[in-house]
Image (tube, rainbow, N blue to C red; front, side):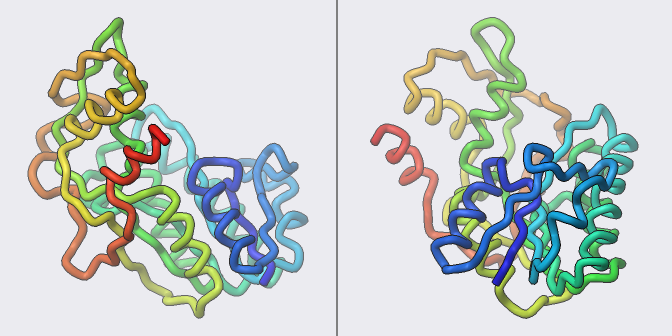
Length: 248
C-alpha cells in the first residue's frame, strides 16, 4: 500500500515510517520540509496523490485551549479535505488517552478538536489513543528546567514506547477502518517524577527533580486520570527495557 505519514519527520512519525517500510509498504512523508503546509493547505493534496491511507501524527504548540482548537482544527480540516479529493480510504489519527478528562490543557483541547473533526469527517477512520511516551519525563524536564532544577507533576502513567506506537499505527493503517477508537499503553504503571529521575540518571545528567504541579497540570490530573481503560492494547517494550537501551 501507499501510506502517507503526516508529520513523518517527528519522533512517532519516524517510527511509523520505518515500520511501514519494514512491512513492505510505500511510505510517503508529508511535512513542511517536503512542501506540504497543513495550516494553509498548500501542497497537501499533491502529497497525497495515490495514497491508500494516511497516518496523522501532527503536532502544534499553542498558548491556550482556544488557540489549540483553532490550530489543530485548521490543520485537520485541510488534511481531511485533501484526503477526500485524493480518494484516501483510511485516516489513522494518533491521539492521547484521557484527554477528555482534561479539556482545559491546551494541547489536549487541540487533540479533542482533531478527534471531533475526524469522527464527523468524510474519510473512514481509526483513532489510536496512546498513553504518554517513555520520553515524557525527560520532555517535562526540558520544558520546566530553571537553572539546575525542574518541577515535574506527580502524574500516574502507564507509558508506552514511541517505537511500539509507530509500529501499531503502521499496522492499523493497512487494516480496514474501525470508524472508532482504541487505547494503546505500555506494560507498567509508573510515576512521572520517578521516570524523569531515572531517565536523567541514564543520560548522566545532574538535574534536581522536584515533585509539584507544573506544565499546565494541576491537581485535577492526580490519581488515575491518565491511566488507560481495562480493554487497552498493551505494547511490549517496558520503561526499564527502554532505559537500558539508552545506555547501549
